[in-house]
Amino acid sequence: MNINSKLPSVGTTIFTVMSRLATEHKAINLGQGFPDFPMSEELVALVNEAMKDNYNQYPPMPGWLPLREAIAEKIEFLYQAKVNPDTEITITPGGTYAIYSSLTAILNPGDEVIVFEPAYDSYIPNVEINGATAVKINLVFPDYKIDWDAVRRAVTSKTKAILINSPHNPTGSVISAKDIEQLRSIVKDTNIFIISDEVYEHLIFNNLPHQSILRYPDLLERSFVCFSFGKVYNCTGWKLGYCVAPAELTKEFRKVHQFNAFSCFTPTQVALTTFLKNKEAYLGLSSFMQEKKDYFKQLMLQTRFSMHESYGSYFICGSYERISDESDKELAIRITKEAGVATIPVSAFYHNGKDDKVLRFCFSKKKETLEMAVERLMKI
Ligand code: PMP
Ligand code: GLN
Image 1 (tube, helix red, strand yellow):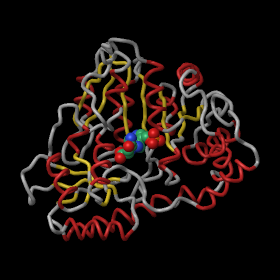
Image 2 (cartoon, helix red, strand yellow):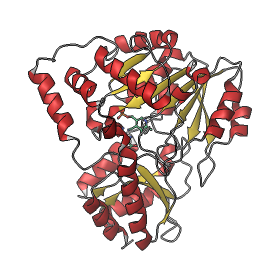
Image 3 (tube, helix red, strand yellow):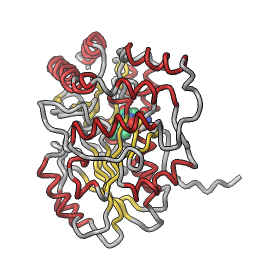
């Protein structure tokens, strides 16, 4: 059979490749981004309770309404935005799905979407499967800041959307109020949509404010803002998230969603409705994760990696010019096999495999895991 692939150049994601290799070689997995410590017992108990209470049938297509109401309250508390839970919030099976559905809702063949590289690996295939073109702009190495002049030059009459991600995977960079000003001046008086991937909203360090698009009504009116509970509550396997977008945009978003997942797992939605009221559980996450980042960065001084700074996310990058001149993929594979530590080569986040000789490390791990990993990395 001839499938005539819609994504001919796409292989298996680097996260799966490296996690598989880690398992095969019994390596410590600092590659794929997931915590190795247990999630909140209280939240687990709330899910059990919801199942026992018989919340096991389809929830409404846009999501369990009390959860959407709790999200709207949280958004007002954090970002002073009034969002209508009925018409502007949709619960999704994860953040990736929310991003895909947003793009699918707006893209037509021939459209262009501005994407910054290194880019989370689903973005470009999500654009291309819709017949649109991803216009790639490199973040400026080594700080991975956005070059707004390059964005201005890249805008054409076909530009349908700009996709931003802060805190950023894989680099841990974050956008500032100045970036928001630049974005605002570029999209003003245009029909350009914004897709904002904010799955790491609560993983931002040094008391930096998260520059959510939700803070800016003039930007929100053209935006799909995507979130993930997996990242907020250390339960990446739950695959539950949501998309916030103005009613007109949400209407189109739900046309895509209703004939894809239709709805999401009910018990977690019921449980999260209660758990979201506990502000400490999400407000404390940044300092909890910053401690891990600082600890890991400090430990890594004993190795020959030169660590960059990370201002948010689960990730920190490290250059390895003092170790070898291998490609980042070669080195990532070699240290998984020889040292027993899996990482992610950052070139995997570039469509053309641009190799700045940087590896990404996930530090959302137990202290012992980080210590054991660094002990192994010292031998490299
Ligand atoms: N965007 C980025 C940048 C991510 O790192 C992740 C986490 N894997 C997601 C989106 C998606 O999260 P989810 O697992 O909820 O689909
Ligand atoms: N977001 C996670 C990461 O960057 C992985 C997600 C996935 O495996 N698809 O590591």
